[in-house]
View 1 (spheres, helix red, strand yellow):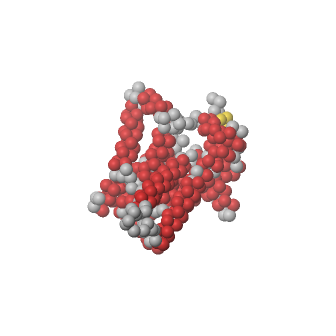
View 2 (tube, one colour; view 1 turned 60 degrees about the vertical axis):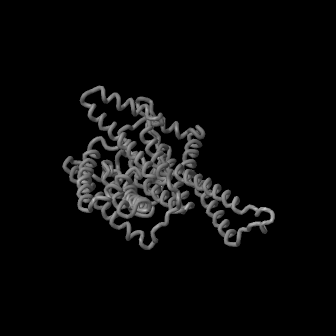
View 3 (cartoon, helix red, strand yellow; view 1 turned 60 degrees about the horizontal axis):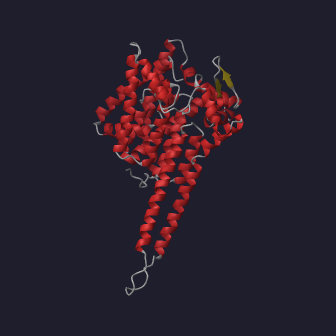
Length: 416
């Protein structure tokens, strides 16, 4: 169904030069978003920097960095919000940066997010360029930047860090750098629960590669069978064939190493939480249940949307949600039809499923879909086929709308 042939990466010395237009465009879009946020917040008497670094999840991450794990809030309804729900890589980076600089934990989180967002943009470009070409790579980065919830990329949240690790892990898989792919997948698994998507992508690609190599080996063995009686000696594999087999064996070892490394981050943290809580391997699920979060196949989300259709004021919002979910599903179908590489399809599919089928925090679903950048590749490919002036007009208009929405969103309910 999809192409798993290892692609040739551009020369390393030209990689940054090739990505420069995408990164410059990304910085311009994010600068516009931050400027509009600063102006909007000032008009409302709020601090844009506080909105970016010291509210919602950002506070939980800085508390982990400062105090470690063990902090929890008991709500009047009996729910227990524990900071064990937050994976440790971002707090570790905040703590490390604060230890070697005058930055506060919040400042460090903001800086990590800014740097990680650039790394994520570069990784998205690298993947898209590899699959569809340089122009599509630039368009993919710009589309990721102008998403309605793109302002989250500049917050002291873990989305940018996770997306950077995921994108470069997928790029490593596509270019045959298996140990690098596994190591980055492990780090992604220390960043967010959705690190499972990166693990699944590495495993799927590795398993299919093993199966294909086994089939090819069986075919080669069939070609090297002894010659029929009276037709000469047994066919032999030359020294070059032996060297080729050694290379294949080494490649198989690297793939196996990647598949072993990939789940270590997620599994290690989940098992540690289970040990910390005394509830065994399922302890992390109990922690999430304290936040009323879980995976129910989307039933709670469906009920949430259906309830909104029962009143006229909220019906348009419900219709918008249905349209948004339909768009996401349609984009994934297009990705399949366009024969995206298997690792991208598996990754995007798992991210989408985990986001849409979570049983709580329905307003967070657009933010949870932020790392699913392969869904943007069909749009990027279509945009790349337009004239430069027309595509610039489209991106510019959407960037302004995104900046205004981001400022309105953070000054209102914001991301829970």
